[in-house]
Length: 387
Image 1 (tube, rainbow, N blue to C red):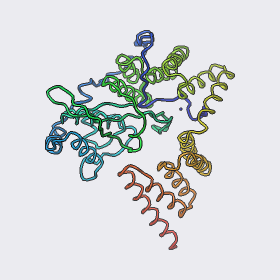
Image 2 (image 1 turned 90 degrees about the vertical axis):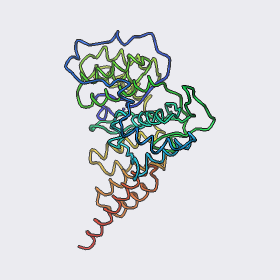
Image 3 (image 1 turned 135 degrees about the vertical axis):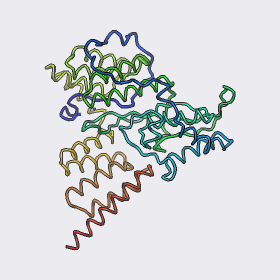
């Protein structure tokens, strides 16, 4: 998710989703139940995923139900979510949690945030809608591997009353990143969101090499939404890792039949072609992928992260700078440059980029973290200069 040294096993799609119509292929046609047997892991039901704890119910009753206007109620929730003295939610790309656990740990990614806020707003008699946001191809690191990211959020559309939904042309969007709330999006059903949750949990299990649990989650997701291209893709990756190469290739092609020209799936297919001695086909796909990514800032940010991980700091800075030339407002990329200069002992330059990262961040908790790192860096630099 593209050099093969980065994506040795292909790309795991976290929170990606396609809303194309389902194809004629059934998940049962490609089941390998007799292979993935050794797991007793519990698969969360829809009810468990969205259930409220007593503490969540108390929060709604004391903080939201005292407000009559449903949109002001939602705005209060949005404010409380990211206020340090309130719910103080922090972003964690690996926080694939049910609603109760998100509320308790105060950690969430976009999907678990959306799940928790849906549960809260539903209890608060607020009508809301899951949304799939059309974001440019991007990646995150988990377990020293790069995974493709999708994005979802929650749109508040009115108030529920006597089992009816009262709609309004106004809406509030609950999202970690305000700028993403303005992007084009499409509606999702609750069932699609549960399938995405299973996809995330399966991907996490696969990254931990727990293939039996990963298999159970992927199959559970496909049973709910057989038109989710990323679930087919990730099941294909699982089969490829497990040595079922022909079946893996079939699932990659099926994923592409749902979502054509998905670079992440094409990358996995190219890797499969390489290990099955089809270099010409692999090279053709890589040229196509490279051409489509040459204007993608997140691609170069990912290359920068890989170079930093490999301790190639000058190379990381070159990739990060290329990313910034395409999108100058990426706080994580500015932070990447700051880290790289720090590793090269260029502390003044590192401090300058850390300050820019703090200024660019849209996340309150992230801004605070960058500011703390900046203060630590300034203290360390001053200590060095005093000797």
